[in-house]
Amino acid sequence: MSGESDRWVTVREAAKILGLSSDMTYALCAAKKILHRRVGIRGGRIQVSTKGIQDYFRSCEVRPVENGNDLANGSQSSQKSKPAHLHSDGSQMRERWRKLLD
Picture 1 (cartoon, rainbow, N blue to C red):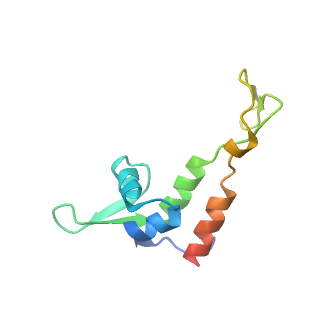
Picture 2: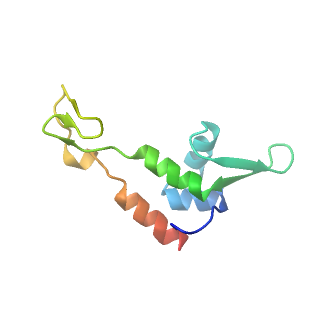
């Protein structure tokens, strides 16, 4: 979706892209964690921005720690390094998102 313009999708479609339930997607909107808009009267229908989904995925990324150094800012970590499976680079989530949008 690198050259594609922003699209607005339903909460159900956004939930599928995110790999979450619709309830969790509504919760993200309520917490203002993901870009969305309400269309209509009395609360209306929620639409979620595909660029907002990309931004949300970026905000969820955890940078790997190597030899006690935080690679994101070069600081020393006083805690033991977490197991590798807890350090997600978000690539699997981004790939799933790309496949669903194409």
